[in-house]
Length: 209
Ligand code: DC
Image (tube, rainbow, N blue to C red; front, side, top):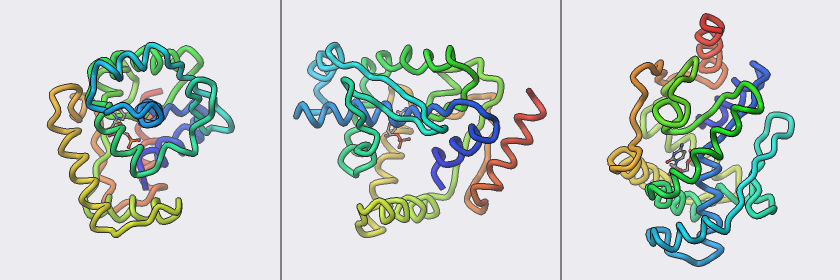
């Protein structure tokens, strides 16, 4: 179970829009790869952003991402885009550029937003916040199953390595490190299934809204 799966289901149950912020970082990574720019090259990535348009469309609860008018949703979950997204998401200009893009969604209605800095930076005044976590081995198994289903199967060991490496970068970077908001409700999903996680969230949301 990815946090996206959980967030999408929660949004469906509540009748809210679902904002997958990882997909936005992935869309920028997609464009960086297309342009054959080094994702660590801050200056060139920033210049690239100045000629990039990013739009979101919502269809039956699913979020589609359009880069310069092209629907790239189906191309965002490859290992190459995943690795590049982790690198570009550490660039301050990228995060700054994406802030208004993410906040605009809230003007369209109630939102279940998912992302590492959603509760701390993007929507600090959110009515309810959750911080999902799970054992790394459990997460690697889940991600591996997703990759197999999407036809990108590699060895589970490499999925584990990729995940741990990405975690290290996401948690230890100086720009927007992965930390829970002080008022977030932690949920350890290691031994829970998707329904159980969503049920817990629904109970918490119902108590607040
Ligand atoms: O959640 P995800 O795997 O789709 O995210 C892709 C990358 O983007 C991941 O390396 C972390 C980064 N990201 C981020 O820094 N901040 C967010 N709000 C969402 C994603």
